[in-house]
Amino acid sequence: MKFLLPEAIEIKRMLVFDERTSCMKPDLHITLNANGVEVDEKLKFSSGNVQLWDVFRDRILDFFKSHPEILLSKNDLVICQLS
Image 1 (tube, rainbow, N blue to C red):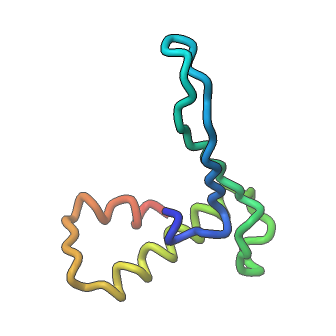
Image 2: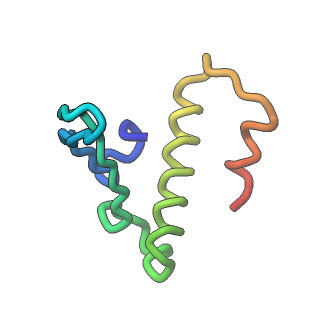
């Protein structure tokens, strides 16, 4: 997803204290920023989640079109046809 929406996904690497082992362990905090994506004028009045979904759908469809070696079944394509 970071490849498809790099401007909307923020990943922070952190160290978190584990009380059971008294050690610091690595952790990832992933934030989805719906305001970070530029959208078309026709989508300006919809909510951030709808805009993010539309941009993600368009980009993943473009990715699959540009990589025809990836095989998809009909069940995989259902998510792209919902909107």
